[in-house]
Length: 425
Image 1 (cartoon, rainbow, N blue to C red):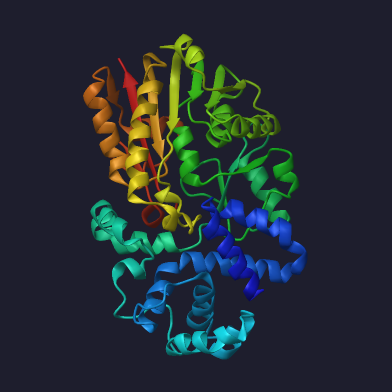
Image 2 (spheres, rainbow, N blue to C red; image 1 turned 45 degrees about the horizontal axis):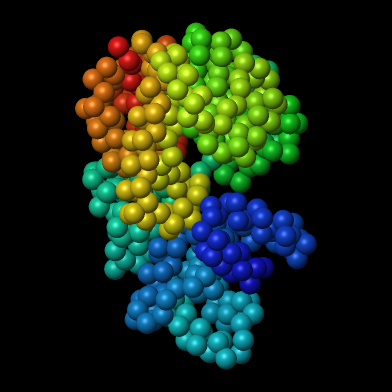
């Protein structure tokens, strides 16, 4: 199992694809090598090594005096020693290495025995498992809450569900899940949300198969509610992807009006169609983005949601490998792409309609700065205070009095999200 974890981590590192996608494909091809308990332990080990990679790499560099680059075999071994208190000999033996490598690895790992993952000399970037280049951005963003938010980003995220009010109620869905032993509870902010533990899995349940529930972080649910689509005649989800927010918007519209889920990927839209059908959303259509079609939709939509492609820094507790794939150049490319998408989407908004900009990023350059730049060149759009919309569409106390909504793992217990609602004159 230990050797299998190294192989899976190597596959994730080599692919450059999202870790969960590689994990599922690798486990599908290799699941017969492990029993049920071993598969669960292997996945947990891989996720923890990815989550703690910054600390593990620091220990490996310290032990080798910077002479050895950390590989996944070293990371797995270091994690077992530092996090589980395993002995060096048994750990090295479990890796299944060639005899010529055993002595070198044993000598390198020996100084780790008796220690834990943290060390007083460990710099903040390593302690919080951050790439060095992004630490200043996070410090600027969070200020006094930096340590709080970084600690929250290192904890595994719960599994949040959105209850499909087209088919059931939250109380009914809660009772159904709890009756099956899943120990669900209501989310504190979203009136349609339920929360399970980090290891929960619902895709094999009857409730999921019947479209009663859908996995969706509470922050994402709230972002969809702020579209305030209940009485809109035409809503466009401009970057719909596989349809997560389209599902929530469709449920809010109660199958009235018209919902168009747009994306550049036919493959993602095909998945969205299946999900919308399962959920009983009948007022939606899926449309691949096409320049001629978009031109005909100019100034027609009451609501245009831009769930923009972004760094995903707000989802790092769910996707621990993502923090190691992101680069500074990625940020620069994403900022330009977001601006281009906003420009195209703005043309679809009818007079008096709204443009809703959403990211799952916590970086200011993708959020506040992006909106500031847009407003500077689009004087016909005005930001609406989120708290006012919250009171009508969500209810309860809005977690911010600012114009924009900013959600974070540490303060709100959700993924990191940014929402700006802009109204066209």
